[in-house]
Image 1 (cartoon, rainbow, N blue to C red):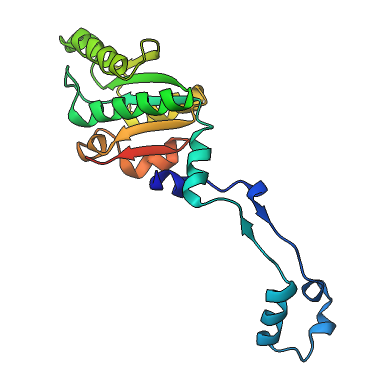
Image 2 (image 1 turned 60 degrees about the vertical axis):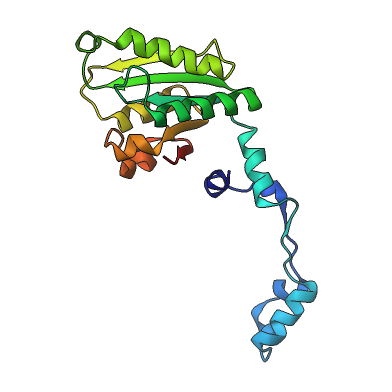
Length: 195
């Protein structure tokens, strides 16, 4: 959850500010006033910022706004790699908690015909999400396009106006997804899960 708070800005409505009359005065009124004196006045009458809730609560508030989550599957393991299983469980948990929809995108540079265990992989995806309480979810296959998975994830996230992408660091470590391009191609927050 700490990672999410670093990605999500605090809403403007949570910060209140007021200006002190001394700070709003024109520059001639400041002549001969030391910086220390100005700080003291500012602390008594000056600008005050007040945060109503802790940063972790703001992250939870921001996650409550998530209504559509993307789960990219980039590995060829028909029973899903450990990282993809973890991402599926996390996606299902977040979607269940916040009432969000899930879309799964299966990405491979080779066509379906060259992967004989494709149906096994689809069954495995369905099983892992159903274990998390999801029997209905969107499923897209982007196979044999010859494009980088990072670009495909970004394109799908943009087309479907997704709120969050859940991805395991395993996809980056295995070089399926280019971590350097995540911020460039993906228009929404990305939750990267550790191995």
